[in-house]
Image 1 (spheres, rainbow, N blue to C red):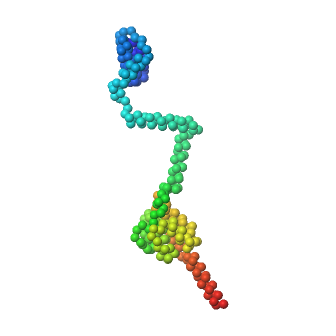
Image 2 (image 1 turned 90 degrees about the vertical axis):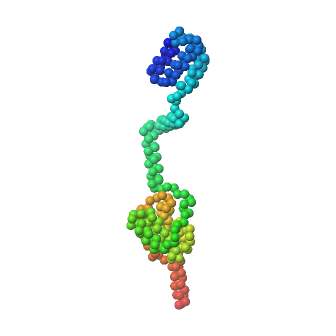
Image 3 (image 1 turned 180 degrees about the vertical axis):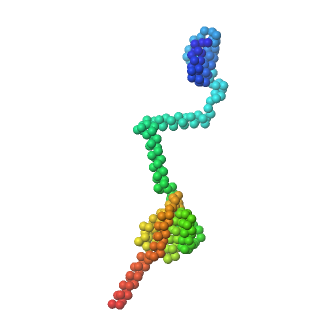
Length: 258
């Protein structure tokens, strides 16, 4: 065996690499092509012819039968890139890999807390959806439906129906015009002008309705009770224009009496 073949054979035995074995065979082929054989003294050839002979030998299909496919090569490249990025980030983070893991875990916790607090972001178009989406029903019917949902612990539906009862009640009292397509926010803004003492609670209830209906939030028992109390308070509240009209009428009668 030639010295070249002996060195490569030792490398193949130590590393167990099929690539080295391929190089061994290609080198032997290059030696034979240059005029030598495995039983004869080694033939000294220049570097370029030996490299070209090895390249031609290694280009044969038999050496590539077990090569990984395109998908496997892409996955290997991806994992190599990910490993390099992780290594670079770990080297730049105090504490190394442990510190990087702590930073990632903290970021996940922050995002989870924000999602829990704010809910799924609402699309702008969703907030313009009409408050009432089925056949017209009275305030009493909406209240009865809300109570039925609350009795079963269905707080989302209970909040929705109670908000509809509030708006329908204001329409029945002519404090709001019966206008199809009105949103909860619009109803709260208009009702706040007639009942200014409840403006903030009306707006908060409208936001609660939107969060539950369009924002993916889950309503609670407390939210339903707040809305129920608002509904009762609104029924007992006289509109601002009625108070002012009564005051004006009373002043007119007093002036006439004098």
